[in-house]
Image (cartoon, rainbow, N blue to C red; front, side):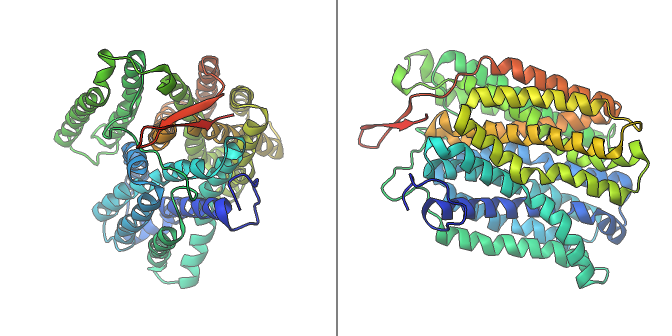
Length: 489
C-alpha cells in the first residue's frame, strides 16, 4: 500500500501499520503517565499519605512534561521517531517500577516527577505520522493518533482498579502499576522492530542545527523568545505550588534555588537560541526557505486553551458534578468520564474537518464553539436537570477535543524538518494551560473557572485571525543540495 491509498482503518500494512503502532505507543505512554490516578485512594492508604501529599504527587506528575516535550521534540527531529519513542518507552519503565516499589512519600514523589517525561511521547508520533500521510489525509490521521492514544489515561482508569482487585492483597496496586511498566518495556521492542521513520525512498529531513528551534527572520526570533516566557512562568508557578506557601514539599532555600535555576536555564536557552539564529542579523534567509513562526505562536495559544482546559477539567469535573448536584462521588466520576470518552471520536473528527474544509476555517468554528461551551458550563447550577448538565459537558468536550485535532492537523504543515520541535512547543503549551487553569481553580469558584477558560478561548479566536491557511508547499533541501517541495494543500 502506498502513501496515497487513503485511510483504511482495518488495514495493518504500510502507512496504516505505522499509524496503528503510533497510537498504541501513545496509548501506552498515557496509561503509564496516569496509572496512579485511579488508584490514589489505595496508594494513599498503603503509603500513609496525607491529602497534601496526594496533591503534591498530582503536581509532580505533570511538572517535568513541559521541558520534556521540548527536549523530546528536538530528539525526534535529530534522531528520528523510531529510536526516540523506543528509548522513551524503555527508559520510562524504570520510574514506573520505582513507583510500584515505593515505600514512602519521598520515593513515590521522585518516581512521579520522573514519570512526567513519558508525557512527552505524544510529540514523537506527530512527526512520524506527518512523514507517512499526505497533506489531504494528515488531519484525520493525526486526529486518530491523538484521540485514540489519549484514551490511554481513560483505559488505565477503567482497568487498573479492576486489575488491582483481581490480584488482591495490599500490594494489588503495585502489581497493576508494575504491569503498565512491563507493557511499556515490551512495546518499546515491538516498536523498534516494526517502525520506519519514513516510507521507502523518502528522505527524513533533519534540522540544520540542534539545541534550539530555527526561525527564518529577525522578527520571528523575537517572537520565539516571547513565546518561551510562559513556559518558564508555568514552571515557576509549579515551584511556587511546591514551596512553603503551597504544599510545602520544598523548603524556602530549595524554592529559591529552583527559581534561580529557572532564570539560569532561560539565559542559557537564550544564548543557544542566538547561537542557532544569530546569522539572521547578518544575512536574510531566501524567501523560498522561510516559514512564519506566527503560525506556531497561534497554535500554541489554541492548544493552551484546548488541551490545557481538558487536563484541568478532567481533574475537577467529578467533584463539580458531586457538589453541584449532591450525588455520590463514584456516580459523579462515571458521569464525568463521558468528557474523556469523547476523545475517541472528537479529535479524529476535528482532523477530518480540517482536511475537508481547511485548517483556519475549522479552527475558527471550533474555537468559537469552545468559548460558547465553557460559557454554558459556567451557568450550570443545581436547578439544571443532571442529564442536561452532562450533555452540556459532552458538547463542550467535542469542541475542546476536535480543536486539539484541528491544531495538530496544522502543526506538521509549517516546516517539515522542525515538526518535532514545533509539536513539542505546542504540546508544552497544553501543559502550561493546565498549570494556569488549575491554579486559577484553586483561587476562584467553579463558575469563574469556566468563564476564565471561555475568555482565553476568545483570545485564541482573535489570534487565529492572524493565522494564514497553509497552501502551496514547504521547501526542504537534500544533502546534495537539491530542493524538494512538500505539498501542504
